[in-house]
Image (cartoon, rainbow, N blue to C red):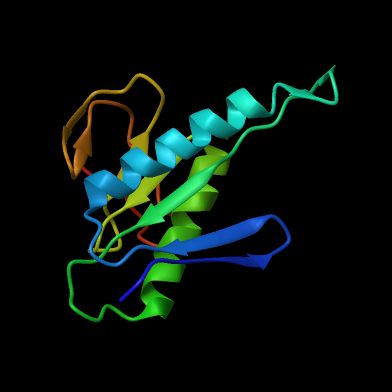
Length: 129
């Protein structure tokens, strides 16, 4: 299977990266967020403030189903936006694991960062960290 990137609508895009583990997906999303912020500082010589909020979802199943992945990625995106924007948030395969991947946070494992948890409305709980 190959990587697929596409526009979902408005300002939302999706990237499907088969064979990429959760930690690598979060690292790539964070690198994209940082690169975008750096490039968006000036447009035609004028200062511009533009940032990315990115939701990442991963699944360790062979064929997880796109509906489930998109639902979790969308929840992660809105968690990133509601947590202040300009950040990456990861939601794991159990639908209720949230990883706020903030600039400067220390990742202690692919399923944990040392930071405040994000409340997920569809789970009605604060994930334990």
